[in-house]
Length: 161
Image (cartoon, rainbow, N blue to C red; front, side):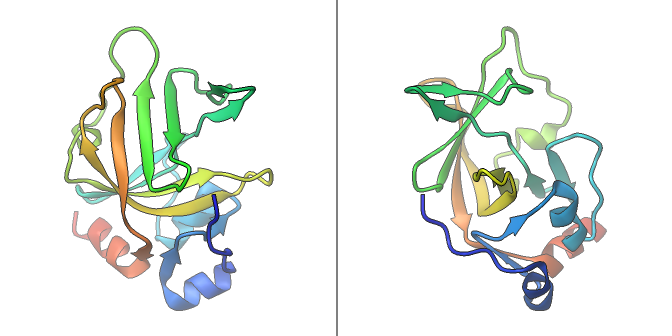
């Protein structure tokens, strides 16, 4: 999976745009540029009703099997090899928690940040949108629809909510 080289925080602040491949040491670093603060330990932060920043934990392949992060065994999130699709599957018994209707809204776009490297920085993968509720295997399917994020546009969405 080849992504563009990350820019410095100063370069991102100067252009006021996130580009695919930009990395952030922490969730708080990424959200600070969006004029937001972390929402406890939640992996999703909404900006109005139709935009959210999402920091899903990604399952990794080990010895031919997908292994979810040890601290999140109920969700199995996987990326396509070209990082343009993300599948989200609930693997626990029963229904997943449904604490916010916006999670199910097909019109919500998600700025996706994931840990892809040994350094465990969060990499911006782009703006994703849910394609359909589930695939043949019961996973929600998200596809990248944009390679950049206008910081000012997202801050405005938050303030207009």
